[in-house]
Image (cartoon, rainbow, N blue to C red; front, side, top):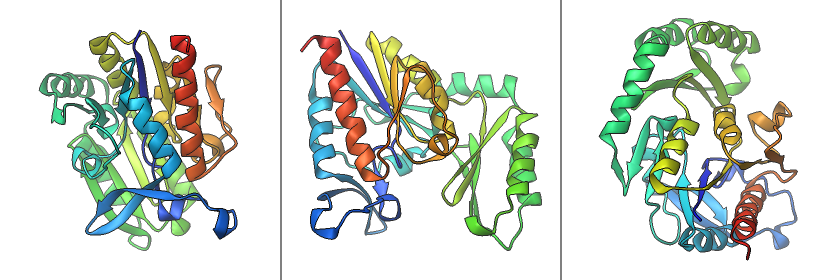
Length: 274
């Protein structure tokens, strides 16, 4: 028996200081472990309990732990989970499959072929974003891995009508729009975490797949898993989104990350009859 555990990272397993959601009194707040440093500053955290649980889960010979993220490879490689590095990682929302830290070229070629056949080109979408965005709230525009694009914005200043119009425009061209904190993502609809998860399951012979995520870009991943969880925050929670195989957790913030790892461990134990 092999259980594949594919989990989104930001605001699912790991949390920035702004996303921790520590609402309890300071003396009873959980101890935190920094798992990412960027430009010499701590950036992302887990609770120490979640980190210990994840270390045990990833070390289980029956488990293949697969970090699954919209981050680029460079952004993902800043993260340092305790324990051994994951043998597989899914980056760029499924556009890059890392095997022992190295990008799989065959997978990247397959992704490129599908995108060329099924959706409008990146250049068209990026040009539309830049031509319609307002300098009053646009801070940065980025292209990730030559696969998708995103804007960094002052969220409070972005008109809801602009986001709605962009969503409709993108959908007609085979793209998906996702608003996550200060970032507005435009991602090709065929570029999915679920496709990459299925490929890892095929390669590893996984008999069961578990998943977790918080955003619209994680929905396909959760639906493709045998069992999945979402935290009580994020795009999916805001939309009250769920599915028969998805457990909607009440916990939000970094404690939701801890609860998700507990749920993974409990599911693995059930599958193995422990």
